[in-house]
Length: 276
Image (tube, rainbow, N blue to C red; front, side, top):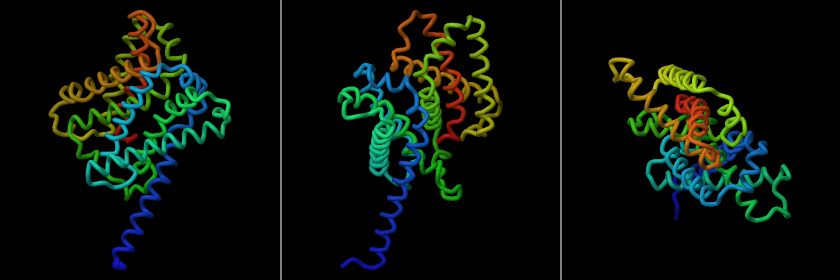
């Protein structure tokens, strides 16, 4: 016979998990809604290469799992619990995306299965990230966990990559990224690179990444965090542009597009500690 204390504890755990799922759904809605209203995202769901889409889902799943180690929607103590949280966040992301697409009449009974799967999968990426970050964003400040403060250097770079991915994903599908790159001269591109580095460096020190206090000079911090973070942002930008088929032009067009998207990606990398 279960003891009253054990039963009460189990009920409390169930209520806590249900509350966590509710936060996850709210986070998925908040993070994904702007992209749900974007025509380019609907079109990518229709036409996106399925190999690239499958790879993108794998990358998203890996990012969600990594984020669950730092800011999952409930407190965890093992890799198994983190994996379950990541799976729950992905399921919530898919469910919220499908529901909203249906409510907005973008997903109907006449929609072809291939198109429906593509639309839901593309939209589920930001929704899943929002779901796994819901606990960090929506809990009372006193309840928030600070596991990310104990992350090592590689953990900090992962958080920067996650922030870059989220920021870049919000603008990469738009035509404006390509148009801006087309209108830029090499001098504009160099100026944007410098602005990205300077802004990233300023924000990194304002946010205060773990480990910065060990540097004796800003020169070392600039190399370890700013240059590394900008490199991560450029790699994320290159991958996102490739995923959305935005690298079909020549080398010059590719470089300019990566530099343009690298600016918001760098902001996401710098603000990663605020976002996650």
